[in-house]
Length: 87
Image 1 (cartoon, one colour):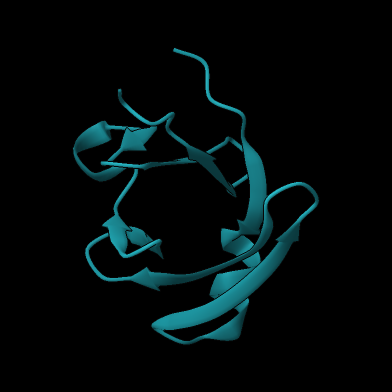
Image 2 (image 1 turned 180 degrees about the vertical axis):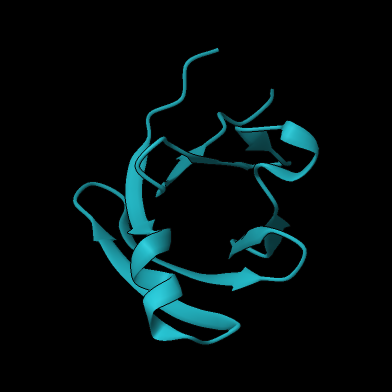
C-alpha cells in the first residue's frame, strides 16, 4: 500500500523549544488545515486526528494506526499520511 506523505514538522525545531509538548497547524494544499501535537515522553509521539502515535517506539517506523501513518526520516522530519478508507 502506498500512502502520500506530507512533511509536518522537524524534531530538531521541536527540541529547540525546550517544552514537553507543542501544538502545530499546517495548511496542506489539497486537504486543508491539519492540527497536531508533538510530545516527548518515552519517545516522540504525535497526536493527530484523535490518534496518539509513537513512531520509532520498539523500532517501528513508520507506525500506522486506524486512519493515520506517522514516520520520521533520517533528518528528523515528521511525516504524516492518511490511510485510505476501508470498504
